[in-house]
Amino acid sequence: MSSLEKKISNFKKELNERNVFTEDDITELESHILDKVDDLKQSGLSEDDAFNETLSDLGPIDEIAAEYSKVNLSSINKCMLFCLGYISINFFISLIWNITKFITCHPHNSGHTINITYIPILSPLLDHFLGYEYSYILIFISLLNIVSICVLLYFLLNKKHNLLLLISNKILSIKSSSYTKKLPISFIILAMPVSSIILNIITQENGFTEMTVEALYVNDNLDYILINIVLLFAFIIKYVKNKSINDASFYMILGYLLITMADRYIPRIIMSICFHQNSFNSVTIVLLFILLVILMSYCITKIINNRLLEKHPNFILPSILVVLLAGYTLIFPINTYFFLSYTPYAKFYTIFSVLSGIMQLCLSSFIIISIFIEPKTINFGKTTKLS
Amino acid sequence: MINKELVAASSRPLILSLLSKKESYGYEIIKNIQEISDNKMVWKEGMLYPILKKLCENGYIECNWKEVDGRKRKYYKITKDGLKLLESEKKQWMEVNKTFNNVWGDILCLV
Image 1: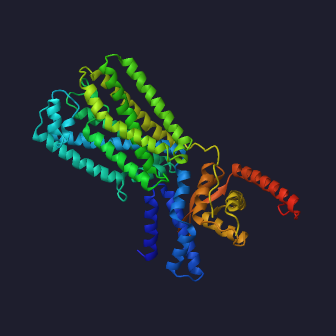
Image 2: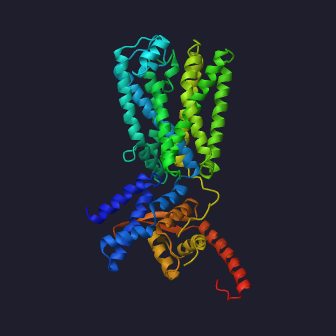
Image 3: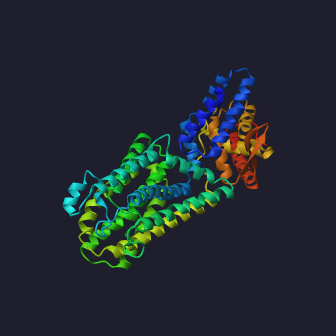
């Protein structure tokens, strides 16, 4: 590789890491650089000088990235990234969870499906408190889970080898591609929640007919609450470091955290508290869930369409983060205390599982539809800063 | 040196005008602007491309990739909607120019 090719390749890598450019955008900027370097070389400059002048005339990458993010991260794309974040991160976690379960073929403890004993540090305390027996197999499973979860978090949060970057760049690029490229990606997007559901069913001890509590989403245990808290903190750190919020994986992680909160934790907190008073029936639970989904969609749409997040990052985003943090840390004690004390919860847990599964499939469908449809923006928006 | 806001505001009509004459690609557009404005309009070149992309998404211009002399370039062509937008922008600039002429008394230069 010549020196110029190396420099261009590094430049392209840097653009890719910004997570707002599509493949087309990067190729176009590359062709601009090549054309300009040729012109400058013809007028007598050396290759290095020509390249440096081209880059400085191009402008700071941060500013270019900010302008491209206004185009590439449009409202509909942000919604799509929200959903994609939830579907993909959920899929990876579910994959790890089910693979370790499959490998270790661990039977459930006396029908209880909340596997809170999977953290060896906390096991002795929790087991004593909740009366479970734990064995060295559980510790092994727990260590296996922890290692795979750490690997997953590395690939979700690392700057260079980032799964979210890969997925979001691919999805943003695919929108301007032909149908033949869109179809396989759409299939993969639909396959993610479907395979999570199927894997959960396969690895569940009693099959789909009884205790379908795990059938349609990953069981909530301490491992996953901790993953979510780690993701939340990483998200906070990323936001504090870079307040311009113009990154596709930012929206993916935010989408995952918000939708997980609404899908899994809030209904269970409500249910836990309500069940403690024995006053709810199935219909009410379903209605509550639907109401929650509507409220969540309204909040997210408001955040995206009104650019609330960009206008008031000093207020809105920290508020969301505080709510998420409070929610994630409170869910476990509230859920454990109220939920476990009420034994026939399975039926309602099942209803939530089914609704959650349906929601995942709806989110995937939304992503696929938005890949195929190109809605035109109504107003052009502010003119770009050119000089 | 021309004011930043003026440069930004004039970018869209300039791009559409150039594309209404012939199909072109990003770097060629930048070179044309420099020639036409006698190097007075200085753009941060990287900013042109998001504008072109936004115009393309809104249907005012069309884009397709072409390979010329072994180099892949994205060529842009104006559409009917783009021509309509250009006409409306032209009218607006002529109104502004008329107003300035009334105040400053110079000869009308936009024909």
